[in-house]
Structures are given as structure tokens and as C-alpha cells.
Image (cartoon, rainbow over all chains, first blue to last red; front, side, top):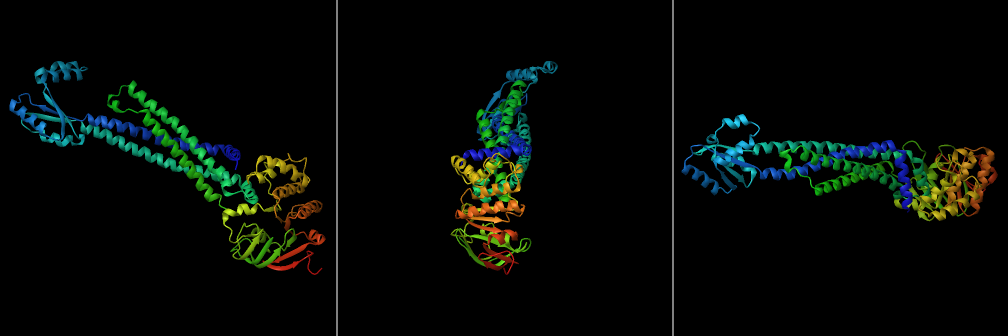
Length: 293
Length: 228
């Protein structure tokens, strides 16, 4: 069997049905761009999540008039809890300077609050960030403790939003992938139909099924491959855009959202493999159904 | 070369079936297969080429049992059989040379062999000098010659011709018949389904007549009409 023959026949098929081929290629490209972007975001979120979760903290604010024994009791409690990874006491002077720094753009407020009105607090980090509300409840209402704040719920909301949107994106991508496979199937069907004379002559003179089928299967494979290569380009662009945006607009919440070149490479490989799979599946089904002896 | 034993094939609708057909065709024979439209001639041709399988009975062609032959072997079997049709079935977007070469290309023959064989066979069918023409630039007789060249380029043991002169005027038909006769003289068995009484009568070859799916007559040196 000559490779040259297959290359020639496949390119003739692609060129004859170029509009349909383009439609199939772009459907693959669009769906795989979505898949790729979703995968990339998922990896970014995974990195960011561990970063964010490492940042989940409990702030146990103390009353200004807390007594020495009460302070000791709170500290002992923190020390004894196995769910607490570490804690530090923030004295008034440091609390006040943090307060001034954080609210630097609101000088009126800063000037109106005297240092004595700023509460001291414990900064507590946890073994498991998800336990933040439970641990917080232990200290709430303890003598000398004013309030307990945690940023768990805010991070939880962000994670939920990102999870839901990833599921939606992947769902849309899946639907598009199925339509891409069906489009490829249809392109191959048209190719088979437009070459039915050739095919019947091939059968007549004793060409083997493999020989008849391979050009059509290659056609589908190439459509899937081309589509996935376009998608790979789009995903690289998306990655650059995200990295640029995070740096340029210094979105601090997304500081942990780092996309490594390893993540990118993995995503591109997955995309190209899916593209080839979709092309092969589409054309195989078409060949099986419309080229049966 | 071809042996049918009590072969029956019926269709629920459409094509006409055949029933209880037995005959044997030897190496290098020339046989006319006659009968009215719908008598089952084409069904017999399709059975010989393993395009269809019989319901019952057995068929042997070129030493192969077509009933038990697995489908993956069919392409290799067909390389021993040449087939031509009333409507020529040429590829309109290929030149004469390419049409013939295609038959060798798709069974994986090397380029060098193709470039050596095709001009030779085109010369045999009298089309040398026209190898770069396209089918729509040829007369009907010339197109049928291309089809014969394509069917014969593999030097098949058997040539099946399904009303090869059906679309041709009498003079051109004779040209095609002369060609088939020459091919037959090289040792290739020719089975030709036809309605052309003139050709059958003047060639005086073996005649197998099918009537409503049954073998009606099998006569050596026969004619189209009965009782001559």
C-alpha cells in the first residue's frame, strides 16, 4: 500500500468538501477552546485554592478591658486545640499600625479612631480551613472575647462560583464536541457520497475495505487534528491574557491564580488528543454506516 | 471455471430472483446469457461476482466456493474477475489512462508496473493515442473500450459483461464484440448478458437462457430465438 495514494486521496477529499470541512474544523476548534480554557482555569483554581485555603484565618478579637487570666485562658485554649495549626498574639501597637495601613485611603476614619480603641487580637491559622466556623464558635462568647471573624465564607463563595462556572463551561463544551463529531460524520458521509462512483469501481476491481476506508478515516482525523491545533492556539492566547491581566491590573485576590507552563502543556496535549479522538470517532461511524459492503 | 449447483435467490421486492439454477462454464468459454428483462440475468451476474449470496445452493467460481467465502476475501477474489456494464461506469474526472490505472492503483500495484501495463492494454483495445482524453470526449464505443481495458488490465480469468452493447449502435457493437472475442482467445472466459439477437445469432456461441428465474435452455452454438 502506498502512503502517497492515501495522502493524495485524503487531500482531494478535503479540498472537494472544503466548506463542510471548515465548518467541522471550526466546531472542533470552538468546543476544544472551551474545553481547554475550562481545564486551564480549573488548574489555576486548584493552585489558587490551596493558596487561598492556606490563607483562611480566624481573627479572635479581644475586648479592650480583657483581664490577664482571661487572656491566658484564651491562649491556653488555642494551644490545646488540635485543629489549630498556629496562632500569634497581635499587640495593640501593631494592630493600630495595621489598621492605619489598611485604611490609608480613608484618613478621616483613621484620625477619628484613637489607638486605645483598636482591639488586640489573636491571628489563628487552622489545620483544615473548612473547620473555621466550628473553631470560631468555641471562642465566641468566651469571657474577654469580643468577636471572631473568619474569611472562610468569602473564599467558599468564590470557590462555589468557580466550580459552577467550570461545570457549565465543560457541559457546553461537551455538547459542542458531540456536534463536532456529528458534523465530521456528515462531512465524511458527503465525501463518501460524492465519491460513490470511485468507491463502486474500487469494489469492482477488488480494492480491499481498508484501502477504500483509510482515506475517509484520515480525512476525519485531520479535521479533528486541525481543529484541535486552532484550539491549542486559542488556549495559549487565553493563558497569556489571564497572566497579563493578573499582573497588569494587580488583582490581589487572584495572586494565587498561577498557570504554570506545565499546566499549559498538559492542557494542550489533552486538547489535541480529544480532537483526534472526535475526528476518528466521527469518521469511523460514517465509514461503518455509509461504506458497508 | 464457474459452477452453479441448484442455486436459488429470491427478493422480497425489486430485483427478480432465480430458482434452482445449475450450469457449468469451462475455462476460456464464451457464453451468452439471454432472457427478457426481469428474468434474472443480472441476478446471476451478481451471484458470479459475489455481489450477493444465494439463499440456497452452491457457487464455485475460479476454484473458490463463493457461499462460504468470508467477506474479507471477496476483494482478492474479484481481482480474478473483470466486469463491464451497459453504462460503462467510468470516472468522469479521470483521463482514459487514469481510469485504467485506477484499477491497478487501488489494488496496490507499484507505479512502475502500472506505467508499463496501461499503455499496453490501451493499445490492445485500440485506444493508443487517446490516453489523455476524458470520458466525455469519447464516443460510446470508445468509452466501452476503456471499461474493457479497465476490466482486463488485471488479466482476469473471467470477464462478466452485463449488456455491454446495450447503449451502442450496431456498428460500434460489432467493434466491441470483436474485442471481447479477442480477449476470449487469450483464454479468458467471457459471460455476456445481452438482448441483442443479431449478435447472438451470428456468433453461434453457447447460449444459456433464463426465463422467469428458471434455466430455460442451455445450448452450445445456440441462437437467440428458439428452434433454429
